[in-house]
Structure formats: C-alpha cells, structure tokens
Amino acid sequence: MSFGDGYSDPALRRIQRQPAQVIQEARDGDLVSLNDISHYLPIAPQLQTQEVLIMVLSHLTESKLQEAIGNTSLECIYLLTKRADIAMIALGAFSFIGPQDSFPESLLSDSWPGIFQWANILVESHVKEGTDEGQNTLEMIASALYFLALYGVAFQSMMSATPGMVELATHLWLSEEFSSNPERTQSPFPYCSTVFYAILDKADSTALNVVLRTAGGGAHDIAHTALRRLRSTIANPTPSFPIRAQMQISVLFEMTRRDRPSFDLRRAISSNDGTKLAVLALRCFLTVPLSEVTTPAVRMAFKYLSNLLDADEGVTNVRVAIEEGMLGALIDISSSLHLLGEDVRGLIATIVGVTVPSHLIYHSVLCAFESKIPQFEVLEGLARDHRSPIRDSWYQMREFAMKRFMMRLKFDRSPDAMGPQITTCDQCQRSASKDAFRRCSGCHVTYYCAKECQLAAWKTKHRAECKRKKEECAKKAVKRKDRLFISHIVVHDICHNSPTLEKLAARNLPGMPLSQVGFSVDYTCVPERYGVVDLSSGSEPPGYVNCFIPSGEKCMQFRMIAKKSLWTEGRKLWGAGGMPNLEATLNRSSETYTIVDGVDINIERPVFYELIEEPEEPTAE
Image 1: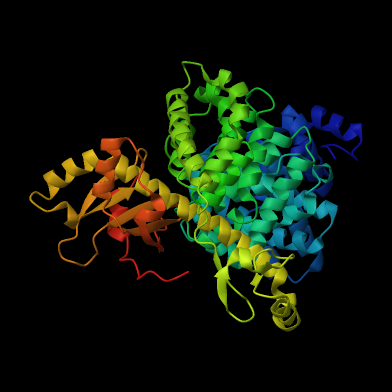
Image 2: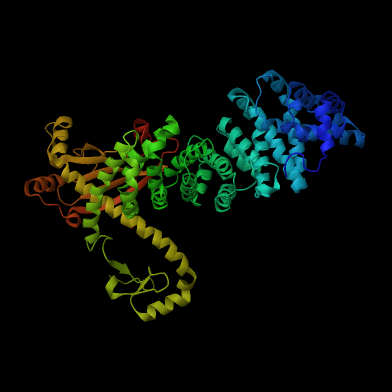
C-alpha cells in the first residue's frame, strides 16, 4: 500500500490548487480534509510546511485529550479521537521528508506531552484491533515518534526519559509481529523496531527489565521473537532487506549490551543462535560493495557480533562465529574499514588482535580456525592492502595460530588426549577399562560390564534418559577435551618460557628457592602474561600453577599442580631440545568460575583482579 491509494486525483488537485482552504478545513476538524493531508503530505510540497505541522499538533494536545476523557457525548469522543488518530498519521508522514530547519524544536518539545499521551491511547486501541489497517496505523504512530527522535540526541533523550515511554516503545515493537510481511504495511521501513531501538539507546540501565515486564514473558520469549524476525528477514530478502535487517540487529544490539542488566536476555540470545545469525547477516550485507544503505547495516552487525563474542560462556560463540565465516567476512571488509568509523574499526581490531587469538587456547576453537585455512589461502589476497588497519594484526593472529596448530597435533596424537580410559558400569558400578565394557549404541556414552547389566539398566532407567545423556555428555566431552588441551598448552608455555620466569623470580622473589616458587599465566591477554607466585607460606603445594582463561561473561580460573618440577623440566627442554612429558608432569587440575559481569577483562584488568574470588577446593569429576 502506498500513500494516496484509494483516493481520487481530484483530492490531490484540490490540495495543489487550494492548499490554504484544505488546511483551514482540517484545522477546524473536517475529517476528509485532515485525511487527505495525512495521505498526500509526502508527495505534496504545499503541505510540507510549519503551518501544516502546527495544524496537525493542534489535534494532539493535552487539552483535547482531557476534553475527550471528560466528555459524555459518544459522538464528540469519537470525533476528537478520530482527529487525533489521523493527525498522528499526518505527523508520521513528516518522517518521509525528514526534519526541517524551518520547524522550531520548541514547537515539538512543547507539544510532546500531548503527543505522548495520545500515542499511548491510540496504540492500545490499535493493538487490540489486530487488523492490517490497525497495524498500518501503528507503523505510522511509530513513524511519528521516529520523526521526533530525528531532532537530535537531546530530544531523543527527553523522549526516552518520559515515564512510560519504554513501555510504549515495547508495545509498538511487539506489534510488528503482525506485520512480518513488509507488503502489508505502508512502508518497508520497520518504524516500530526503529523507535524501539532509539528509545532503548538513550534509556537508563533499567530499560531491558522494563521491556521484559511489559512483554509479560521471559527472556527466552523476547530473544526468540527478536531472532525469529531477523531470521525471517534473511531467509526472505526484499529490496528493503539492508534497512530492515539493520533495525532488527540494532534491537538485538541493545538487548546484548554489557552495560545493561538483563544478563538473562543477553544469554538467551547467545544460546539461541544469536551469533550464527549475526555472522549470516554480515555475510549477506557483504555480498555487494558497501554503500550508503549497507554501510550502517554492516556497522551495526559488527557491534552486535562484538557483544555476543564475550556473552554467556564466550568460547562457544567464538567457535560458532569462526565456523559460520566471520574471519572470511573480516577479510572481505579489510580494505573498506575506513568507511565503518573509528568505533567499529576498534571493535574489529579487538576481535582480530585479542578475542580470536586468546580463545585459540581452546581445542574446539583452534579446530574451527584450522578448518577455515583453505579459504584463507584464496581470500587473503584481499587483505594485503597496506591501508588496512587490521593487516598486521591479521598476520600476527595467523602466526600465533600456526604455533598452536603444532601443539594441537602433538596433543591429538597422544592416546591419552581425552584422559584416562577408565569407566564405570552404569548398572553395577564396577570399574574397568573402556575396552572391556559394552557401550550403549544409542547415546554412545553409557558403559556396561556385561549384557545382563545393560538389559537391566534399559528396563529400569536408561530407556528414559538415553537421549538426554547423549546430548549432555557430548557437550561435557567437548569441554573436557578443551580443559585437557589447556593443561597441555600451560605446561608447554611455562617450560618454553622458563628462562624468562627464572629472571622474573630472581627479581620479584630474590633469594627464594625455585622449589617454593609457583607460576601464574594470564591467557586473557595477547600475548599471554606470565608471573611468579610465592609458595613459601605453604598455602599452596609445590608445582602450583594458576591461570586465567577467557570465558565470556566469566573468567575461568584454572589451577594445576605438577608432579614434577616445571623448573627442572624447563631446564631439560632448553638443555636437550626436548619436550616435557605432559602425562608424567600433570597431577590434577580444576576449574572454578567467577562471574565478572560488567567488566571487560581484556581492558579493565586491574578491576578484574580486584573482583576475582578465592577459588573453591577442586572437586573430583
């Protein structure tokens, strides 16, 4: 539907020939004239004036609202409400021509209380209506609010601070569910999402909690709605795809900001393919050269993706982003980064220089990175532009990854890469080698010492839990392999850096025997940061190693105790050119998680160390 549909040409000709008379009739409350103005305003220059704006605002005053509320005449109430309804559509039509210098901001700010109160009443009415026509009107109400938000940050902030505005914007955003098909609405531009984003952008830190309360659902319901809309837009592209997707991603960006509680909402988006969709949208935007339309969309996609890479447990999001083609997208955009703005260039530099390299300590992330190497050979020619600000960081990341690849090969060749191959019969609890036991063919993770035990377990319990155990244990197995690989890397890095660590011990702990000196490694930095630990008090045993591992919203504190002295093993390495035996060196390891919400551990490291809690005693797996 376009402006003017259903209206005869004589109506437009009358506006063109007698604009003053039509405007006066509309000012006096004539519904036909007011309706004609609301529909032809975007294409009739005679109507794009301050005079018409004042006329429109005259029907959206607080006094007119109070008159309608206090009136007992149904006809009078209908006329006042209908005029306000059409006037709101006309105000929305001004968004198609944008803010005008000739329109004083004070005119709009003085009218804001009435506009807001009328908008609340009209939105509630049209949401209940649930028709295509009602949805079109909701879009125009949103476009009216968008027109006001265009008048600068101060005006937008005033709107966001108005009590009840976040609730109103939430209702408008939820109403867009009905108009998921852009052909049903007057404009392909998603005004409801745009206003929702604009209000959240300037609202205070409680805004997302207000959204959840207003929507009446949980975080997963809101996340599902936001992600489903983006997924639908990507799957069914239209000429307006970049704009629609950009606004939907903008909403997701606001919902995943780290400086906003609700962390549940960010985690819900993270756990429902939020990262996968972010990369998919980014790749869709980059199928064509950057333009005035696609550049803002690419900017917002990177900002949203950056939010997710350290959301929830972090490592999963980084792995998924790599698997879905994030690194290829970075190569594609490398020569055009100057178009994206300094803030986004900084985010991309962090992704390439810190986020991805720091997560290559995880076996799963390293494997995902390695699987993309063949594509890099083809694509990297695009990244050799000397003007690209990520060029050096990119090749440093590649060099860093190659070193980790060699360590992964050695680790994977070890028969004990997944730890001791001892298991327990799920029925009788007898322990023995996995090779001596039978394994369930359904879940592949439950073992039995004999056929009799397997049959008994299937009848009593395993039939009901087989599928669930397969899913849970598969996730646990991947995490366990990551942890064992981290142990491998830690021993490797400490032994290879033992000369430097000896100098550090002599400087920081002079005169202390190395047998009473432990190690600390911070893998949240790139390159990692090493330190020494005083063990003379006996609070920690000899061979103690304390590591910090990046893990999204949490930091994993990884503790190890070596059977053999890593100082001795390091000297052997440097003396003989060998590599310490990992299995002979490690004694035990444990991980404790400390939530550090609101702190970027890659930047505010002193704050992070102040927040870190004393780890609990390790528990047996």
